[in-house]
Length: 424
Image (cartoon, rainbow, N blue to C red; front, top):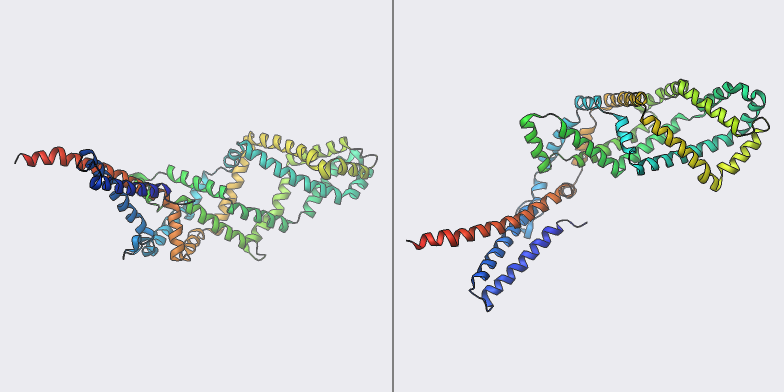
């Protein structure tokens, strides 16, 4: 996307109009006519306004017309980086972040996004495909074990099935592999432009609503107007820094990785020991026993399941839609369950506090380090990419101001000054 298209078009149009009126005022049959003089004067004023603001804006990033003046952004490099670092340090201080965590609601953020049908269906489809793939592989791997257990115990030993499922989940869930998958997915989310935009709007909304006082509001408003407070760049820097930090968590000897792994088993165990989970596993077992002829032969049931549900087109046309429908009902129920939402918010806040307490202080220095590693050209491009639309508005305003000022000056000159001088 080219920048300043409208402003450049207006400048070129003003230049052509200026040339046209100049020719009309010098070599046309209407030379000396009042309307030609007025048009020439106004075109001249508009063009002067365009050129003046063009030079002013260009001087921030380049040398307009190769004039011997320094570019303001590279010249002010240290001050710009220092101010951005100060703003980031203030916004991302440990106390400020912990204060914001107190009012953070993960359930509102998650279920708010899921209110859009497109987001909800995409999530349900993705989870259904992943859950279906895992379930099919699980059934394949444990067909013989399940069959022998079914022959021995049958329906009367449904509790044994629940215990078997819990034991297999605990013993075969490779926590490091799952953690790496979660970290990889989280790292992808930091590069997602939608997530960066959502974070920028969230930070901007919190910043706008925060009580600042009169002078604080004034400085904050000026900072946003002149680009000193740029939530888009703040979100980009935060996401970049978070991505780099997540990369360090993948290292086997990282202390925080060990902290996560140490809490993984206890978290999964607590989840499996909850009454709702045990009830869900029991319901699943009863449905499984009712749906398939387990008493006759589980192997045949598994083969039939794989043929009718788990392989080829049947997987996508039958199993995935069923899981998707179940997930839809589960997500809808969870969204209306106040107790679940409170537990979700409490867990998210506790996790955020733990991460902030362990890793606080790295965000602002990391952002400053990224900016310091920019070359003059890269810093120039970074700043201009964030404010060019506002600068284009300034250039357009320059043309309008020049036109209106020329009109006002002409009226003053012809109807005030000339009659006044003529009396003397």
